[in-house]
Length: 442
Image 1: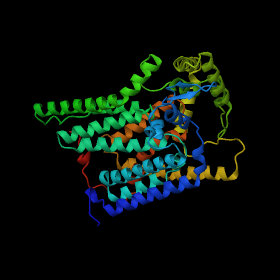
Image 2: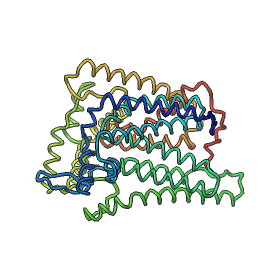
Image 3: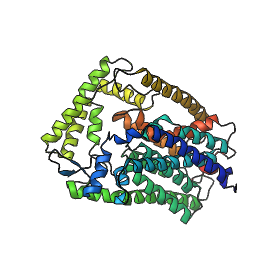
Image 4: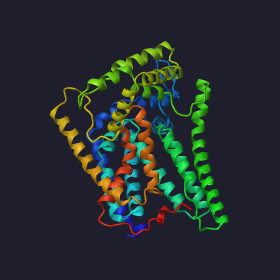
């Protein structure tokens, strides 16, 4: 019954980890069930229109459904579930519960294989209890899906590096590319991660100067093959969205029409003025900026592409006019992404909400301390898979959100990386694997 599987993982322990994930995420969903009725980013509306009208779009004031590319399509498609499942709060909860449990299981297996069983156990506990992911699992938003996709891609890339030459390696790279395409369809920032992975593969060291020239040549061809499989599989997944946008908007659109607004949200004169005078903990209200954008959208007759270009140009003009404030805003955005304590959302905050925020800050302060210990332990491995893949993810998201709008919840897809590194720092043992071991790329 307690049959072992690779790297010291046992089926009984896998079952315990699964039950832990289901219990923790299920409890969070049960306690905050009422929050599933909220629709902060309009995904519920998109899924409803998909089911009822077959159109990925929002309703205008006249009740007409206008096709949109303002949000990425994968999460609404999952909510709509091809009309096979009625859209309900119970379905959203079940979807989030399954995705959350998958994330915890993959984090556990990764920790066991890439370091030791102790690290796997610790990482599974940390990711199951992560405050950001717990909070976002109770909202109709994409963070739960994004974290699960991160682990699927990361594990696939690790398998590709470990696989013997031949079909197994090609399948793993193809699966990783499919996952990457799906990730871009859930959050466009993943596109930068994909580009970073491709560059890292091409720049990876070969067999070494001591290897025969023909062996080095084969290593270079395998790296090219890996990049080609990764990119081609991702492109195949993205192609239906691109073709749909081409048909609807007469423009090749790989991501969304949300990027210009997000850039402008973090780079506008009103926000820069706020940064000049704000005290620590002050809350910036973007209502005026949002209202202006809605008026601009109406002025352009709801042409999302034109409004997106307008917002992007406004942001670029503001950056050019106030470069010092842009630098300050970049620092603010990085601190918001990697901060410990969530920002206040209201000025008249209750004692309970304030206490909860500071408790979250204490959790992340401790977690980041152990993550730093983990980085020190991993210092000779960070430049090689599997850890390089996670490092590139964190760098890619940080680079994007240095320029675009940022807040603490936007690091949700990065938390599996942070928890795994922290687990290495907390683990009582050192990995028995040699430095190249599973990180061997060729």
